[in-house]
Image 1: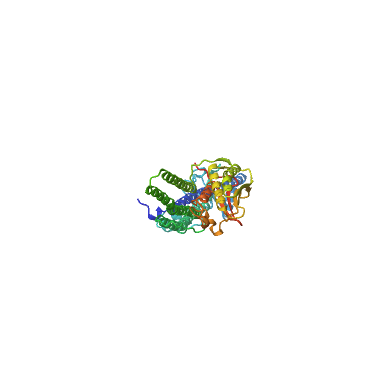
Image 2 (image 1 turned 90 degrees about the vertical axis):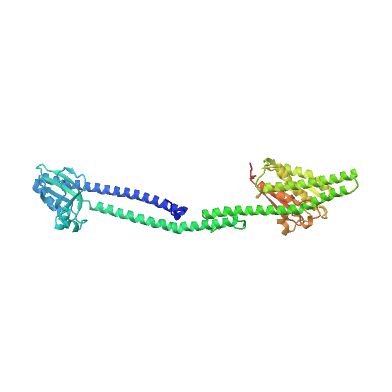
Amino acid sequence: MRLPAVMKTTAARLSALFLVLFALCAAVLVAYMSSLSVRMLTQQTQDTIMAEMQGLDSAYRRGGLPMLVRVVEVRSRQPGANLYLIADPNGRILSGNVESLEPGVLEIQGWTERPFAYRRYGESEAARRALRGEGEDAAAAPQEPNRHRALALVLRLPNQMILLVGRDLGEPEQFRDIVNRALVLAFGMMGVGAFLIWFLVGRRALKRIDAVSQASSRIMGGDLTGRLPVTGSGDEFDRLSENLNVMLSRIARLNDGLKQVSDNIAHDLKTPLTRLRNRAEAALAGKPKTAEYRAALEATIAESDQLIRTFNAILMISRLEAGYSAEQTAPVDLAAIVADVVELYEPAAEAVGVGLRAGAVAAATINANRELVGQALSNVVDNAIKYSAGSGGAPSVSVSLARKPEGLVLEVADNGPGIAPEDIERATERFVRLERSRSQPGSGLGLSLARAVMEFHGGRLELSPQNPGLSVRMIFPGDSRRHDEA
């Protein structure tokens, strides 16, 4: 048997499951409370009967049967009286407020095994016939008011007279009927509540899922600018949509970066490849001279090495930005890296008339890759020297390391021409070469690699114009954390 279409939805199934669970819990609770209440009322009834029986026994001991009859007559006429009956040894009723009993009740001694039917004095003949089940009156007479049930204690007196003291069970039965009606009403209310939950909450959830499915279909169709809907309620659907939107944004950014890299490779590597071809063609077109061939081959090898370095830098940037790298990390001394880089570039800086010095350097050890950090710092220092040379005055570059509130700050500052504020964001993109740098050798990947290295180590690269010059800050996290990769 196939389930209805509505039951195939999670919301409908959850509503049905909660309805069944609530119904079972309510049924068990109501049954337990009903049973406990009936037992308590029954126990109270038995205690009341025992107290009445003790009082009658005391009267019998004081005045015998005449005293007992008088006490029974008085008590049976009181409002809300219990059941009192005195019968002869044959079961014929002599006194009390009970006119008839269910057969067999007076034949036992002690507590009645089960509630029995009886009729009080003053009830109609139709009720009597209904109680006995006689004739048409049995069907026509009202049953509920006349078919009383009671619990009683039956004793035989020393003279074999029978004394019965009982109590009507109308209150416990009425209580049970009230509980049963309440249970039916509760089930009905839970059914209506489950339907309302499905209609108001389940349908809303289904609409949101449909909206997510439609947005996903558009995204799978190639529209990476699409985003999953967010209502602002902060529920699990919103959290899921927000996380997926962040993922989609990162995918779109990576795709844009891939497209940009492809365009840049096609544009910026065309020139060196053309030079290689022209140089080889010129060498073949001329007269075969060993010295000229050797010079052409050496220039070709140098150009090829530059191309290889460019491709290696592109691959390294892509791997670092994608969050994957086989590079291992270990505790490294940043101060030692600063000293090594400054010592390495001092001759080159002196050759172009730039003063390179190490400023204040604090002792700092972090968990990082020494080669990557050294490569990033070398790129930044190389750029500072290259663009400071020939800027007039006394060009200088300083490298400092300090522990600040935002983390460990490795700063390279120069007094060269600097970068215009509107070009700061573009300066760290791949293959971007600003107008002032067109005359300088390079591929435009130095700052891009430095930024990727800092992101790999959980830090960031900040560029800020100075007057004059440029400050490049490599900020490592203060707790030296990084993105560990297996």
